[in-house]
Image (cartoon, rainbow, N blue to C red; front, side, top):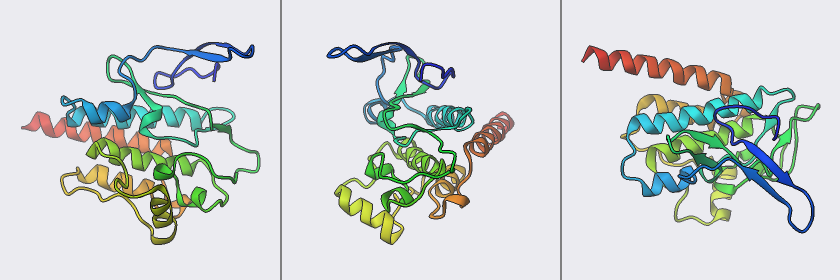
Length: 216
């Protein structure tokens, strides 16, 4: 983590590895997590929500294209911290792994509501599991709600694994974001876009939106 340098990655400033006082020192991010911001702030507009999504995509693209690539494995709004300018910093690399030379891994990881079907099913998975989780984060940014609220973790896991359950996309969701999140949580990992593709799509969307606003 100490070698990672990106505007959307939480910086590691120092560490103490001597027991019993083992700890990490990271940059101060006073607004807390995106989870908290989405649920407590009343001043979040669509532009800010797009910013949260874009920042997260750029940070994840950096991790996946690092050499060797890094899989986060627990991407969710509680692990996305917010600085004083409302920029996103990806944090909590407790479950992250360098991508294996065999290109796939197995084993349960992450948090159920954000987990990809292949992870829930203890099957082989790749970096596309992070893309699935990102699709859930997009939904959170759009709705400000908890995915699968009212369901137990077991109910949510079985629904995703056996019934292709996904959060309900609200009718008020911009069509581009609805299409993007659905692409991210495709059942087949190979059908999900890469973060490079996601960053490019978000950039094009922002340009189109800006041009449309200037015409008005």
